[in-house]
Image 1 (cartoon, one colour):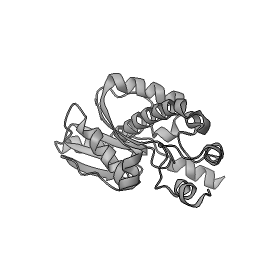
Image 2 (cartoon, rainbow, N blue to C red):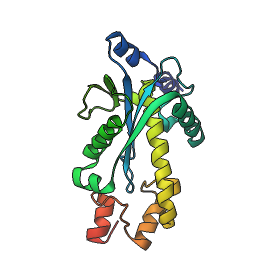
Image 3 (tube, helix red, strand yellow):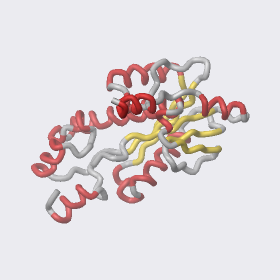
Image 4 (tube, rainbow, N blue to C red):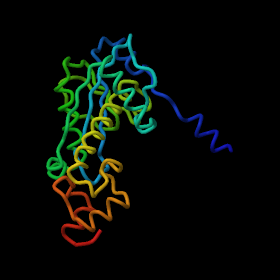
Amino acid sequence: MANSQTKQVEKTSPDFAFETEARRQGLGPIAGIDEAGRGPWAGPVVAAAVILDPRNIPAGLDDSKRLSAEKREVCFAELANMALWAVGIATVEEIDRLNILQASLLAMRRAVDRLPKRPGIALIDGNRSPLLDCQTRAIVKGDQKSLSIAAASIVAKVQRDRMMVRLAEQHPEYGWERNKGYGTNQHQRALAAFGVTPHHRQSFKPIHKILYQDTI
């Protein structure tokens, strides 16, 4: 019981404190940045950059992993009307060439470059920042602390999930509309039966083993 209570106390919801601090320093606009798709065996990695309107923030923003798919779609629709946002993508080929960390940072840079406004500071989920033409602040578990990063996590997740659903129409055997490219049992069985597609990350160990050792 004590452990359960401790976990409940530790769980926090994102707020606007980091953004308020940046505004006090005269930094703005403020962009939150996050990515989706670092762990899957297939598909691109997608990053989003979001600039919230402090006077018009959608209710219910949170780390995308803590929201249902239905709630993410609702939040995404509100963000589309109430915030400035852009998405950047790093392809499977870029993931294999650069590694997943560098590809994620590349996707983040592309997202920021596509924003309609140049941010004065970018708040980034994690402990590494991409090279940007503005100030940056990396925040570990930022999607649980900053509303701007939480918004970016939702946009990135929704956009990547939609991409994987479209890819699943081309390759229905792998169940990407459900597993989104992660290495589920169904995905592993499909790999054993049908092999590797051009959308699989060959640099990832399970896929590399199939290609070069004929085992998973």
